[in-house]
Image (cartoon, rainbow, N blue to C red; front, side, top):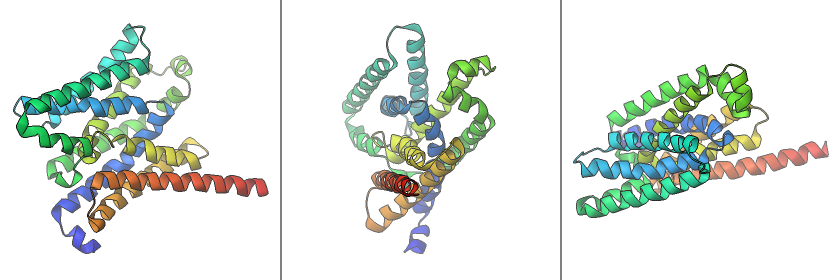
Length: 275
């Protein structure tokens, strides 16, 4: 059955993209969860719907460019509002999220021929990815991974204590902007795989599962990446075997790993106490 699945070009592309984006999203997710940016990534995912709608409104057959561009605009807009208003970050993101989703749904509802696209972008369609998207995903993964590992020490210090990072000579503002740019690109691109509703499961769940078992940052990174790799890969395979939607199966597979990590951490605690 696996051989049959791999003989299908669309399944090959889906599996390759899942095995690329799953581990990378988990790698990003370690810093996203540690820096309490999960709601920020959720806001970016939902806001990208307006970028999709604008792309179709302007007559584009593939709205990926406008989707990413609008997500970047939203990301830096949230930062600007945080720095120049008295509003709390959660309030800013709640306003942006609700407004963007509302605008996107209204625009799509005005274009009767594109109403079916709403379902596709809400729940994702990794099986429809083409060769160009696989290459684009590979570029994002390579550049993002190089950035994360080249700035690992600075990012770790920034995550632990921003003031200490400034004193230590870390260019906090610039590093924040670059990190958020890669996070925005990752979220916007991953929407096509899992959909707006489920995209943060790639970022948050594997990283959270790794955190349950890790004793330090290195272990957290390794475990998160491994869980992201296996949950995304198994999700694609299981969706093919049982003829189920790929995105939700990937999300559920990562949830299973999370539950197993919780149980494993409890067993380890009991074992340590008994010794």
